[in-house]
Length: 160
Image (cartoon, rainbow, N blue to C red; front, side):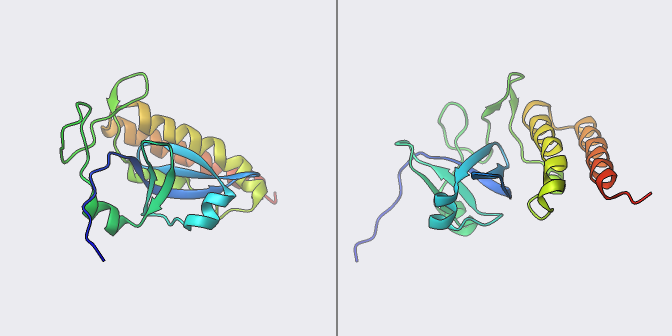
C-alpha cells in the first residue's frame, strides 16, 4: 500500500466523559461538549481519553488518543502551529483549558433518576471551565459545585 501524510485541519476535543441521554449521547470534551446520535456511538465506539474529531466538511469521527496525538499539532487562533490550544472559549475570551475537576461531574454510571439530578451540575461545571480563567478561585468554584452535586444526589438516597 502507498503511504500518506495527513494535512487536514480538524476541530477536535479529548473525551472526558460519555453520558447517555434519551435520544443521543453527551460527550464532555476538554474544550467543549457535543451531542452525538446513537449511530455515531455504534459506528465509532469512542472511549474516554480518545478524541472526538470534526472535519472541515462536517463529518464527525473518533480517533484513539495515541493516533490523534501522533498525527495532529494544535493550532492557535491565527492558524499557526503551536503546542497549546489558544481558542477563545465563551464570551469572556478566556483560553479553553481542560480541567481535571470535570471528571468528577460524570454521571453515566448513575441510575437514570440520579443522572437527572447530576446532569445540571455537570452543565454548570462545563460552563465554569469554558468561561472562567484557570486559577485557584476557579478550582474552588468547581470544588464547591462538586460538593453541591454530591449533596443533591444524596438527597435522593436519604432514608431519614
